[in-house]
Image (cartoon, rainbow, N blue to C red; front, side):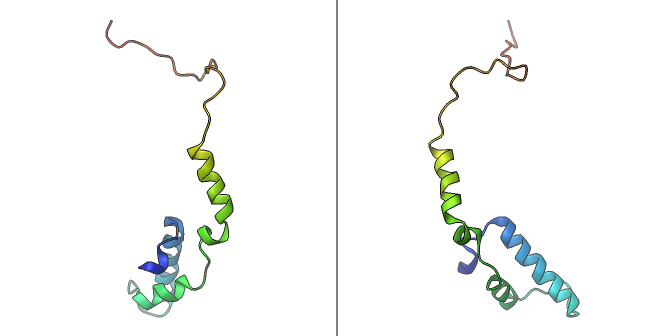
Length: 85
């Protein structure tokens, strides 16, 4: 369904849940129609459209992340141990 291609999984899940609730209140529990999903999609703007600059900034941060300046010496740091010595 092309209308949902830029929606996040959470947005799709919310749309399906709202359609299911609406169908239940209309006396047809478990009967979600294709048209219901299309109508529901028209009621919200996906985050990719709403916050495209912020999402792109997060992606850039992940792609161009820099390594830490020094080795982790905290008490939570991974301690390498030989299993077979």
